[in-house]
Length: 220
Image (cartoon, rainbow, N blue to C red; front, top):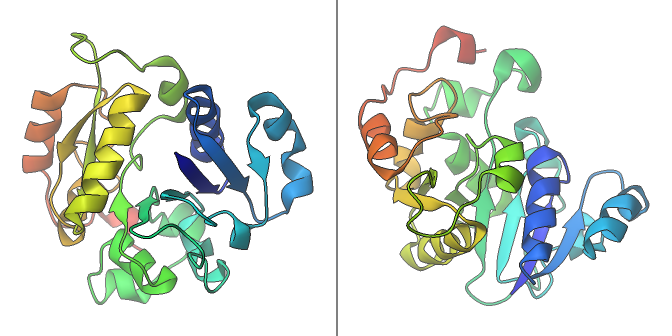
């Protein structure tokens, strides 16, 4: 499968490593340009490209950039992507640590991923936002393993969600359907499921126990 990854930090870099190891055709981009990705490209065989080229022909595109950087992504980001492309959003809003106050999230009550959708002009599937990056490399397990971790996955497009869940299964993790994008607050930072290293039953329970009240530490 052709996959574009926009953002080469901890999550983006480790997804590049695992997905290329699984035989996928991966293009990877960051904000600093392809010349800064030479080492990752040599390690993995992924193609370093500019952000506006990462989605070209891709069936899945991963957007894994700092939340505040989403509006700076190139316009037409998904131009040239494959028909029915699924877009994975890994983002989290950290107003005090990194992003500053974003009124649409705090005053309008938008979930992070709904805000991201507005900027990129395409539905997204929220996944990997509460996953430890190193677990992508170290904690994958075959289907049915008793210690296989489960990840929550939220999104409105059921076909895209199914495509993403299948990819996560291939990566070595179970998934739990966390509802639509307006429900994705259940997996934002400081909720019970965020960073949870457990299986399907515990992840399902944690999602049900989330509160829609955003904690003070995660308000600007």
